[in-house]
Each structure stands twice: as structure tokens, then as C-alpha cells.
Length: 429
Image (cartoon, rainbow, N blue to C red):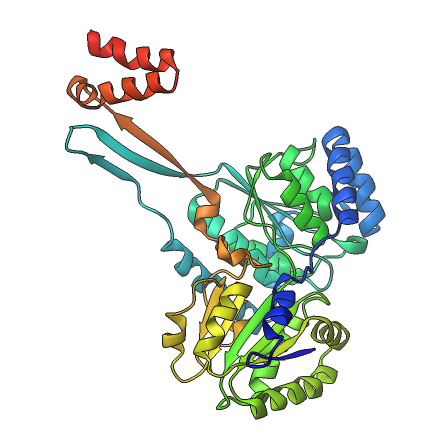
């Protein structure tokens, strides 16, 4: 774990190194994914079946390619009431939040009498990737499927790996409550390629969203253009800006909530209190052995964790903006004032009683967020990722007469006479 002090000489260089540290897929992953994509494109089902046998250790023809929706209903009905209630609460809050994101069409007449507007429509089919196996994430199902349904997607397809043919019933229950139409027992880069190109079993989709490992992220990156994607997501990250009035155990737990995801995850604390920094570091070390994910959390914290001392919390914000973190907690008295200064973050959690982890499940905003400093230019998953905008306009003779000559002049200036004539011939008539 790195300890830095922004007032000490050499800090700028050390912080730049931290900002630029690369924790994502290497060239070997990219090369292997390229090979997988080509196989699926060229061989279809045969490649998907072979790769599933290789990576997930089961035969799709024996275990079944698809999971029936009746199995999802059975999983839902078999849940403990407390888990069913939790999923229902999460689904309801996510649905309410995302319903408000749906954009309105526009249709206006301007001063020249020209009609201008835009119409929004959902993509026909969307694919969502859900990490699989026993350590699966029903929250990922809800966070990806519910915005798609809110957008009006007609066909919603889920792919998820099932190592040894096993799948977590919570994932099936979440698929039931979210209204997923198809579920395929396929994961990894081969699943992304199957959704993009289509196979005899799996029809292609228009957009693919959802988290996954480095292979899945790389497949989405390479296939962008064949299909739309939400983002290329890398290892999870959290930045916490906290003063000394916090309970160090709380902040340590927040840092570990991301460290336990993956050895390449990153957790960073900014504070203006040196004694508090020491207390949080000690609390992290004390809490790690209590976790069932201790090995992962320990590796992540030791390799990528950081505690940074700043003269004031306000002076931390320009440094936070350089990191452009996926998650940002502002645990201080006047979190709103600091929030006003923030320019780059995927999602921000305001106040001492707003841990990032609540946003992963039941708060409402989406937990699929830009990582790797991409919050500088990208946003979290939303209804808009499943929609596209079609502009339209309508001119009458008077409207064309008002603006057409300018179009002719510009077309001629660009050396495109057919463009110019297309407009001018109507002006002449």
C-alpha cells in the first residue's frame, strides 16, 4: 500500500505514477480474444461448444444450451422470503430511477417555418453479460436488464458462464423479476462474439452490456462497431475523501468493499488527518483476515491501495479529478460543497452514511460505471445505452428558399456539385 503526502517534494511524480498505473488486459489477452472471436464468427455453434467445454468443463449438448424461463420462475419461488424481498426492493428502485432517464421526442417549427425534430427508439435486441458460476451477481442482472426494459427493448438476451454446468439460482431469480427473454449457458469472449455475430442457436443482438473479466472486456472492445457496447470496463476502483471525524472502521470497510472484487482492484483514501490515516490503515489490516475474500483483498490492497495526506479536503478534489474514479465517496461534514468541485467521477456517494456498497444493490442508480479514468469522458450505464435517436426535418418551398442558397454555396465551396444541384434544382423550379 502506498503512502503519499501532497506537501512533500516528489509528490507530483509519485502521484502521476499512481494515476498512470495500468491494471488492465495485456497483449496476450488481446491476441487470444482475437482468435476466439474469429473462431466464433467462422465456426458458429461448433466453436462456442468447443470453447465452453474447454473453459467451463461441460458439454452444451448435454447440459442444454438455453435455460428455460420456467427454471427462472422456479428459482424465484424457491428463494427465502428475505432474499425475494431484497431483490424486489432493488428491482423496484432501479426501475423507478431508470424510468426517469427515458428521453422525450422533439418536434418544433423554427422561424423559417422549417420542421425539425428527433425521435427516440429502442434497439430491437440487447444482450447482457452476467458473470457466472457459484460466485454470481444477481445485482448485475437487475442493473443491466431493467434499463433495457425501460428503454423498450423487444428481445433481451442474457449470457452467463455455468462452470461444470452449475448456475446460481439467485441469478435465475433475478432474470425472472427483470423479465429476461432468453438465457444461454455461454460465457467468456465466445459469448460476446456469439451475441455479436449470431450462431445457429443464438440470434445476434444490437447492443451488448454488462461486466466481465479481462477477456470479456477485450471482446467487447474488439467487437464495437459490429455491435454497440456500454463501455470497456476494467478493474473496480474506489476513492474515498474523508476527514478525521469518521469512524476508521467504516472507511476501512468501504475501501475493502472494492479491494475484495479482484486482485487488480484499487482503493484510495484522501484525508487531511494524519492520525486518521494511520487508524484507517490499521483498520484495513485488522479487517482483511475476517473476510472470506481475504486473499483477494490483501493482494489488491498491497499492490494497488493508497492513502494520500492533503492539507485540506478541497485540495484533494483536483487530484481526484485526475484519477476520474469509478466510485467516489465524500465522507465529511459538507459533502455537497466538495461535490460542487468534482468534475470527473462515475458515481458519487455523499455523506458519512452513504457507503458505495449500497449503490451496488438497492439505491437505484446504475452500478455499471466507467473505470480506468474513463469517467473523464464516459458515463454509467443508462436507458440511453439501449436507445438511438433519429433526427428528422421537413421543408416547404418557402423554407427551402430561405436556407437553400446557403447550402448551394457551401456545397460548391466543398467541390460537391451534385450536392449543390440537388438543392438548386428545387430552387429553380
